[in-house]
Image (cartoon, rainbow, N blue to C red; front, side, top):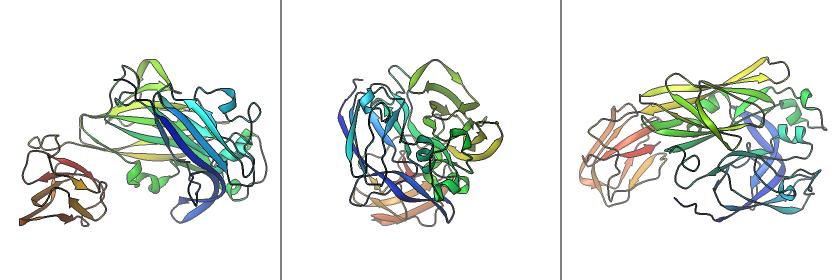
Length: 373
């Protein structure tokens, strides 16, 4: 399939007045990048930026903070002026704005971060992930096809430094005491529906993995899934290799495909260890749910019947007129809800169902809709 190149424009604000919830009800100060609007807000990590291979990308950064910042495009092939390293290009001073331009030639997983007083600005939260994908759902040209993608960026911070930032300090003096995936940890990560891998048995799922922290991370895959690494630091691995444990050091990125033929409820363990002495520090968990479905219901959407919104919170609506019969199955193929209205329904209250992945069978057809609550 031909690459459908476009011009992609992103406008980010550099900010130093953010807060972030690191545990349930516990907040710390952060610096970071936020999408530009009337009231830009720093997020941890910064917004995920996804481009298509061949795109011409322009990232405008406006500095609304009291100190200078840059955007370093970590791992991307860019010229010196657009690389965001102040010693070889320039800094964006308070109130200033600039545009970083590059061509997204290589598929893969990359990072972006501030390169001014790097140790301090990184631990304060000025970083994010960039992914360059193909429009045919292959990892790279003539590479394997995948069905869906999940993005996981490991990082850490030292709470005292974030709450009382002072000055630059050497790399080895960083002593992180909070360890995150996509800015979350512990139960907030494991129970956060946006971070749990949901897939159908037989599917291939692409994981975009990166580490922007000061600790070494180990992604430990359960025996219930098969995992193969295909890309490292934005480049194709000549001989892809199966993995049960993948070490990802600070600044490294990998693209991995996982799959299973079974119904699975499991997790990926992510261990963190000190880069200087190798001492274990913490573990986070990424949930995995795979599901099978009764063979009488095939993997085809109902023609002419739309449902919205998806994900759904409380009320499910039907687009094409009224529906008389609805059956909802959980990820194990067990029917958990059934409604029949002879005169038809235009909506359905699903508040009684727990959050997760479900299937809809509409009007007794042999087709299904996949729905996330």
